[in-house]
Amino acid sequence: MRKPLLLLALAAALLPACRAAPRAGTLVQVSTIDALLVGVYDGSMSCRELVRRGDFGIGTFERLDGEMIVLGGEVFQVKADGKVYRPSPDTRTPFAAVCAFEPGSSFEFEGPVDFEGLKRLLDGVLPNKNLFYAIRIDGAFARMKTRSVPAQQKPYPPLAEVTKHQPVFRMENVAGTIVGLRCPPFVKGVGVPGCHLHFLSADRSRGGHVLDFSLGRGTCAVDRCRRFVLLLPGGDGAFGRADLGRDRGEELERVEK
Ligand SMILES: [Zn+2]
Image (cartoon, rainbow, N blue to C red):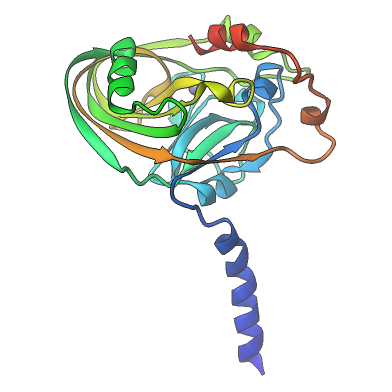
């Protein structure tokens, strides 16, 4: 009599995982960038749940506690002290985007290439401006400039206030990986149009939200995502009360740079 019960328990345990199994070519995003801009920093999805949706991506953490890098299914947290932490699977995110990374194309770099140069390069190799792309660059960086953000207390200030005092980190001759996205212009208000890149050093000790860099030699791998899934925070939380009707394009521009 025990076996059917055991099987049932097993099926029940497996079902949620199957349901959330990542689908190739799908970018899954938690909440919207404008919600983050107005200070909705309460997490709505755990890291455990997030990596079930994708093994590659970027985001931030509950209370805006640093920059998130998801690489190889592992979650890394670059806090305001510039150090890299491994958050508990229960740690929640208010904003993140992940995919099951399966690069369809890749190319080699012969640098030096900076952020602007990379954008031009990507425009050349990814002429379809209206798709989502997950971008992985492994290389040796002569310079890497990143930032992080400090954890906030309620009542949460808008993101543009927080980034006025953002800690900036400058690295030299550092090997590592850029984990990033290029999103189409029409995601304005929902996601970050254009290139949004985070960095993690090869020794997993440094990283952050990329402001600029100079890349010597590297490899760029790209996964094209034709599906975009948006998972919005439910419940009666701050997301439901946020004013998300205004154009916050300029605010986003300031916050990203
Ligand atoms: Zn970022």
